[in-house]
Length: 440
Ligand SMILES: Cc1cc2nc3c(=O)[nH]c(=O)nc-3n(C[C@H](O)[C@H](O)[C@H](O)COP(=O)(O)OP(=O)(O)OC[C@H]3O[C@@H](n4cnc5c(N)ncnc54)[C@H](O)[C@@H]3O)c2cc1C
Image (cartoon, rainbow, N blue to C red; front, side, top):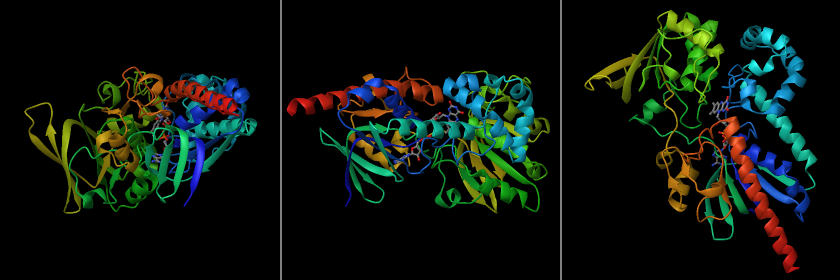
């Protein structure tokens, strides 16, 4: 049985985790005042270190950052783009990326990079390079071990944390940062196992926003003998991406029949429907998730062709009868009358889950063990983001739910919180090394 010990364990190895290590490396106190190398372990069940869910191999190659370069708030990313743009553009080989380039060519040629919406995978390349260089430069003070595994349970004995992973290996650390991204989705409506496991029911319930559209949607639709009807549940940014995907692949154009989009609000983010779309204004003017205009130009083709029917309703049930899905909804605008929609594919984009009803083994354990208030979207965390009563337990990323911590689900947000957490971690490391010196 493994009994490895670390000073700090980061559970989840995406951007939230990268941002904490980034600020640890940037703080001179960390470098100067520690008597020994700090041993950190980064656990990630997917193994796509630092890029996590949005910026690595799980992202479709032509899915873009939701903000333009300027609004990522990362000067280092801007510099990286300036340095690498020629190379990146020269290596574009897919037709979707070529289309993307044509759209932004003028801005790129005139070096107005700040206005461009770049592919999420490029941000992933940047963050990996940044972290690789930082770890190399700080190898005297920091030793990072990568563990490709899922942590399924953890405990605190008042002094240290003990962990169990999916292979029943045990680990220990003095401090812990939980950076596991969005809460894996609960099922927001009844759905039986056989429907849930059906290859044409496409859901991101296990990993938020990862649909594997290439295998699950592109091939079956392209190869279907006739037109297919698609029912999309929810109208989130993921739904916009799915619509963009359907519209931007010419192989699918003649194969997609009707699309019904069923959601509580009955329209896309920020009220976009065929009637009110303003060309060149983008999907959303809100600061929340401004998705690029690039997507909407494609989605609009479907809207204008009359292929999308937006319905304001609540989904009640999804069933599978006579080789078609049957989705029952209640109309939320009238007296809750019941309506049914059918389709060959159902794509569930209904958003994130809640802590009490998550498919994460770890979250289910944590919610019952730690004195945190599981809120609607995550943990209610007190001062310094430390989980109350649990020394050295910090959380970063979408799991944070304090009222004032808006936008932790963004590049800016996770870096802002990571800065606070890293300072606090360094205080603890310094205190621990002072104690060791006193006792010598
Ligand atoms: C599809 C998508 C696109 C987005 N696009 C943008 C964008 O363009 N701009 C923006 O500002 N924000 C965007 N966001 C918001 C995003 O949440 C943040 O930018 C940031 O990437 C969150 O990083 P994270 O590390 O907290 O989460 P994640 O990237 O989800 O990383 C969490 C990691 O934890 C691992 N993990 C989970 N549970 C365990 C466990 N028990 N044991 C071990 N490992 C575990 C997962 O494998 C994963 O790699 C996007 C989010 C999503 C989901």
